Length: 278
Image 1 (cartoon, helix red, strand yellow):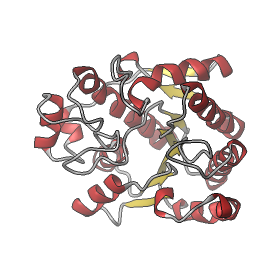
Image 2 (cartoon, helix red, strand yellow; image 1 turned 60 degrees about the horizontal axis):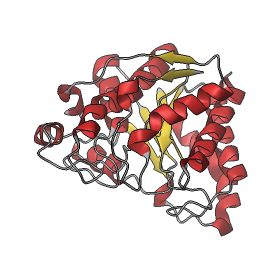
Image 3 (cartoon, rainbow, N blue to C red; image 1 turned 120 degrees about the vertical axis):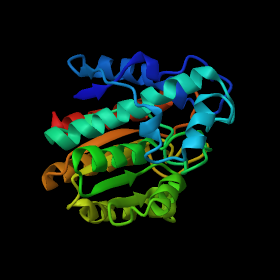
Image 4 (cartoon, rainbow, N blue to C red; image 1 turned 30 degrees about the vertical axis):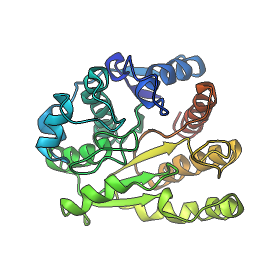
């Protein structure tokens, strides 16, 4: 299991926020290593402002990083700003590795899909999914990138950037939050998931957000049980393995307290990944 991680992607301050995502990467990696001690931790180069501007308005990029515009958490903490070139860098490194080597990889990052072209919110500042997709297209020659967003909430920022930049013929996007899924029809959705994944069969790479907030006990979720979330991830990884489509995956959502409950969900995703890819 290859994990693209540097300590700089973990913000050291943001404790008063409902979302733990800025401070979560280090704790997720520690938990994963306790399960898979032989996992490979791989470094990477942080992205640049120019990279972020491939998917965002440059004035927005500069305003956030210069602490003049609030980030997606609604504050101007330098600790958050300092981490952003590393969180997006981690995800792009995983995506580039998957695209170029056809070997799936993980990025312990979150806080992407609500970030639009010139705005952030919902604990998302820069859209690492769309930045990675743009860099893969412009620098690596990707012809089609899939974004499988199984966070509880609608990936509005991803759609905003796709439409603003005219990327509808390049991006294949599915967002769980755009469906009317409840506890009552969760099993039906799981049964239909392989058919949803078939839409990505022609993609060069799939960027998968393995959201923890659909969990039945999540304060912003309330849909899938722990067992159903594991089955979701098992289906995703196994299907893409069978289709021969490499996956770069990350984390999304997860608001239960204590954080250990969220880490357990991310651990289950790692278990499903290792079971499929080794």
